[in-house]
Amino acid sequence: MADEQKYANYIPDFFECDTVDKAREIILTGNDTMSTEDRWREETTFLAEEMGREFNITSSDLILDYGCGIGRVAKALIERYGCRVMGLDISASMRKMALEYVNSQQFSVVSPQDFDLLVQGGLRVDHTYAIWVLQHTYDPRVELSRIQSSLKPGGRFYLVNEPGRCVPCDMGWVNDGLDIFKLVPTYGLQVVKEGRITLYPMNRESDKWPVANTYQREG
Image (cartoon, rainbow, N blue to C red; front, top):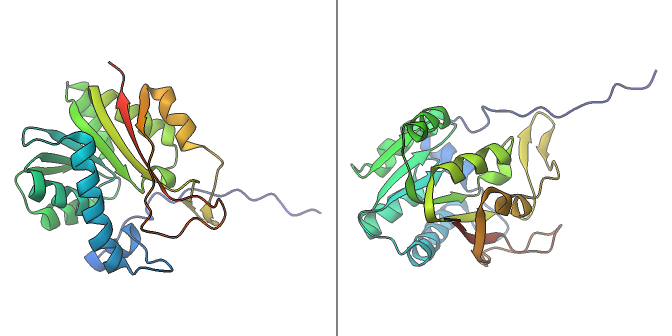
């Protein structure tokens, strides 16, 4: 009898962790040229500067950190620009750590379910960013719909993502073939700038730099 076909099952608890050090390793795994600590320092600074330019951030802005982890980028934006940042993450442990790590009255953090309730009640954000997040989500179409519905018309969305997908499953990291960059414009988010993060080596399989694109919600 032939072996039964096996299917990969998504692991929703993959991003739960019990220490800040473990969270940092999950959020920014070391690569061939940089350690987690190196990436944490250099990439965070790079992203804060890029989003300052792309969003033209002011102290009155409310920015959504989609998949905030423990809030490393949120902390940098608040310290640099004095804006408000709302973090969203599926990991309850990382949400708790984020409040302690950012340690600012300008920061709040919610689960996706609670965020949906806030949006239903009328919440809208000025800008949104998702850093190394959509490549790992179970269904990026759900995430993009949430991002689009919560973003003010004319608001910008800054996306950093690998060229492919790497979804945490019980059979390892899986590429389900979904093309994030083809999906984004179908949700009323039009690209205004295509960029790359050249801090890192090119992806060996795709021979492309990690993408850092800016989109704008149609009015």
